[in-house]
Image 1 (cartoon, one colour):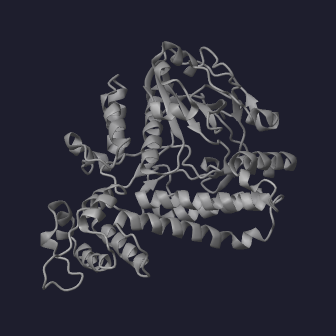
Image 2 (cartoon, one colour):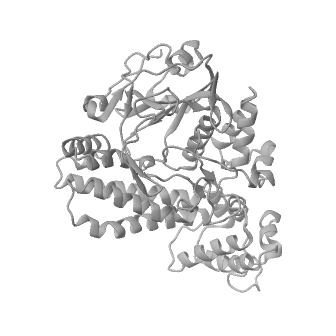
Image 3 (cartoon, one colour):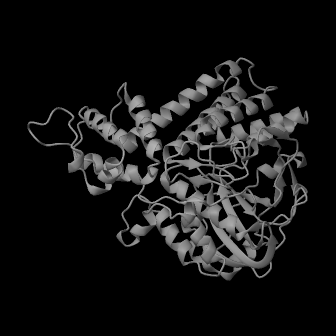
Length: 496
């Protein structure tokens, strides 16, 4: 059955929060991809995912029974400047599904056509950006990074005009929430304070239910959002993910990665990496993501100021920095195979990143090679001795041309003397924290180019790898290679 248990709570908040809009079907739409793992989150019958009826439901040709489609209103700070009204310009919240575990999931259609918030746009999505979101959300999920999920992807024969003529597409994503920082900003700056409180009550009820009945729940909600935001960005920094457009309208109140655009995973380690070619000032460069996350939390604090204790602003930075640091250090220790905490771990990590930057070392491949680091077993070797020549070739190739990395490897060997795990135990643990495969931009582009010609093989291969990125996949080793020269020069824009 394709019957879902719809429980459309958001649509009950009132029409100040949205505009009701029916999706406009694409021409000659056809299914390109379905995600069985995501479907299980809403108890969708997996056997029916291949049914021809699904494309008609996804494309808006037949309304999904129980849906109440609407375009959500919000505003936000975009590249530091306030935009007073944004809203869903090409997407619709089709409805909310209550699964058998009692969880509420948003069913959201991107590329649904024009809405009152389209701002002169056509309301469409293109195949290029839809593939990128599908791949990225699933890649992050399987790396353990909080994110929305992709349920299904449809392509079509409809022509959509961006920098060039492209194929129109639509994507259904699942999220526990589509409330953004900008959702609160909209009601604050339009002085709709009653609606601001209604929205806050909704968020507490559905996402922070443990705060119900607690003293000052709005302040506690804000602090919880700040903590989850800090932890999300710590995950991004640890795994080398650059979002590209950290506007407040792209920030989820539950700390999920949200609204994929010109994102990029680091190839060569470069803290100044700018993945969005429209970001001329580098506002959203990789190394700035933690500080921008805090800036956005300050904007949210201002929007919630009618509800929260004014004193919270004084503790906000310490709360954010503590949450970020604790999460970041815990994740980096896992990547380094460290089961204990030592006072010099911060310096160990900082010196490693400096060494990687010095030579532009491939971030993902270095950490994967480090999993096979071998400590000296010679009886006369000094404590913590590291013999670079005895290291496996994959690791030795990085160290041979980088004296800083060689020096760091000696310090790393000394740090491991404080650990009790054997080399084999540590290697096994590290290989579950350091992916062999990541979604490099050139791999995504290869999949897009093929899909635009009707060949979905590259897309399907990538999905196989990204759903199991820590395994070896011996027949697919070339997908772990560093990008070719053309792949290092790809420019990714916001246009979708």
